[in-house]
Image 1 (tube, rainbow over the protein chains, first blue to last red):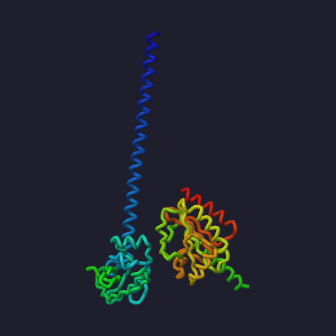
Image 2: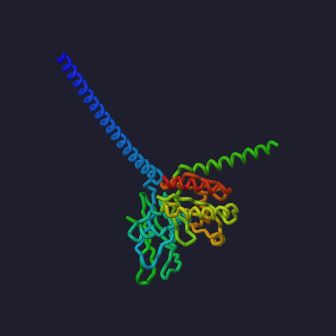
Image 3: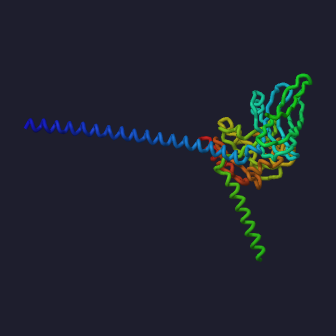
Length: 181
Length: 165
């Protein structure tokens, strides 16, 4: 009788430990599965972001093919003589860009930022660029100045920088249009 | 009779298309823009990202706009310090009339001038006033056309729910 009881207790204990082990295994398995699903989701997310970036670049290449692309950039090297308000750009007499600068954006330019104000497709040949800068000049007076560039668009992309610099000699801002080589 | 029915049908189609076009903005990223404000600064919508933004298109010749603006100003005063911004966009050809009206009504929220109508075209504004609510992520969530007394309660609920997000 005692032997039977002891056997029964032993069997029960074994069964219990086996159940516990099985439960632990199941828990570990589900944790493993969850980790693997999480990993899959993360890698899917990364793929989607990569795809989004590739599509954006492709769209830009389709809209602005490199061989006819012209890009115009604004930069500033001023602090004293000119507070930029807006830039207006005309190509061959047609207005193509009119950009208003907020205080934050103007500050970014003064700190060395360069702004791509306009991108276009132009046929090869001669073109005229007229840029009009509006802002506050010396003595906080309203200031409006223009700069003109006649350029030739060859094969290949062209980059034009419109730079506003302080001209200490005349105590005036100077507007310079440069073509990047 | 046939011409009358045709005209009526055409009018209904145009109205329906217009309302569909405007409500088509809901759920889209709010088109970015910059305009000169009544204080002389240039203000850009994207610089308000992170705030709940209400854009209210109005004109001096619009009666409901006159009714609505003081109520919007109350909303602005109440919630500005918890991340709510309100931009009034005036579309008058002459900004001086708008400046006078702002002074008469005593509104404190920034008012921007869209004399070239570029921004109102971007937002498909057909009639005044139009009120657009943008969430903190920069997406258009609600567009209201016109104003009737009681609309301000809807605005209040929507602003509060967007602020809570």
